[in-house]
Image (tube, rainbow, N blue to C red; front, side):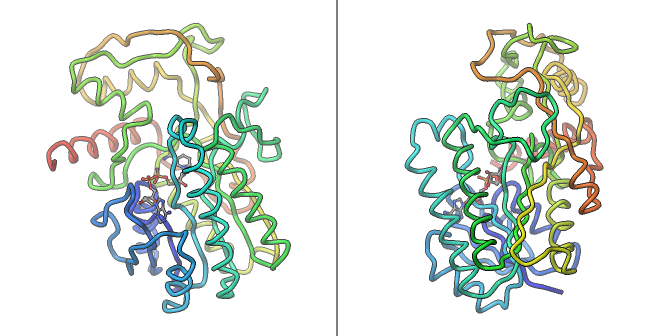
Length: 326
Ligand SMILES: NC(=O)c1ccc[n+]([C@@H]2O[C@H](COP(=O)([O-])OP(=O)(O)OC[C@H]3O[C@@H](n4cnc5c(N)ncnc54)[C@H](O)[C@@H]3O)[C@@H](O)[C@H]2O)c1
C-alpha cells in the first residue's frame, strides 16, 4: 500500500479517483479547499482542507503522510468563466500547479500525474486527435491546462520528476449515485436540467457534416477516467518511467457520439419524450472531436469499459440522488 496526494479529491473526478485508489488498497491524502468540492464526497482518505497555492500546507501533507506520488486534479474548469476572469484561471491553475510542483520536488516525491484536458488542443484540423498535435487552446482555461503541462514537463527535465499527463475528453456518468456530477456545465446534466424545468434540451447546430448533422464528441465514463489514474500510478510505481520523463495521454473511448444520439439516450433512459430545440451553431465548435487512444492502451494497458448507455444511466441516477437530497 502506498500513499498518494490527491488535490481536488472532494470534486467530481477527484472523488472517483479517491474511491478507485481505496478499492485498490491504496491510501489517498486529499488536499482540497472546498471551493467547488464537497467534504462528504471524499471518503476513505486523509483529508486536509487547504489550497494548493499554500506551499506550506502541501509540503506538510506530503511529509506527514510519507506520500509517494501526487495526483493533481484541483483546478477551476469553466471555459466561459475563464474568458471573463482570466486572472482567476492563471492564478488557480497555473500558479497553483507551479506551487504544487515546487512542493513535490522539495519533498522529494518522485511521481506526478496531472489532470489535463482535450481543451489543450483547441480546434484541430483533424477529427481524430493524437497526442503529438500542437496545442492551440481557445480559452484561458485551455491555456492554463497547457501551461500546466509545460510546467510539469520542464520540472521533470530539471529535477528528474516522472510526469504523466492525462488529457480527458468529455467526462460523464458516476460510479455511484452520490458521486454524480454536481455541476451543470455539460450536455448530459444540461439535458436533465432542461427536462426537469419542462424545457426542451438545446442542440447548437444541426447542419454539421456529421452523420446526423450534430456535433460528435468522445464521451468517457468518470469511473474509466479514475481507472486511467490507477493505471498511470501502477506504471510509475513499477518504475515504468525514466526519471525526468513526461508523457501525455488522451483519455477517451476513441469513438464519438453525436449530440442527437446523446439526447436520444437521455430520452430512453429517463423515459421522457422531447423534441430538442435546434438553435444556431456556437462559434468555435468543431464538427467532430474524438481521441486517438492507442498510446494509453499500448503503454498503460488502459481502455474504457463503459458505453454511452452506462454513462447516461449512472448520470441520471446521480442527478436524481442530488434532487432527492437537496
Ligand atoms: N469535468 C470534466 O469534464 C473535465 C474534462 C477535462 C478535464 N477536467 C479537469 O479535471 C479536473 C477536475 O475536474 P472536476 O470536474 O472534478 O471539477 P470539480 O470542480 O468538481 O473539482 C475540482 C476540485 O478541486 C478543488 N479545488 C479547486 N481549486 C483548488 C485549490 N486552489 N486548492 C485546493 N483545491 C482546489 C475544488 O474544491 C474541487 O473539489 C480539473 O483539473 C479539470 O480541469 C475536467
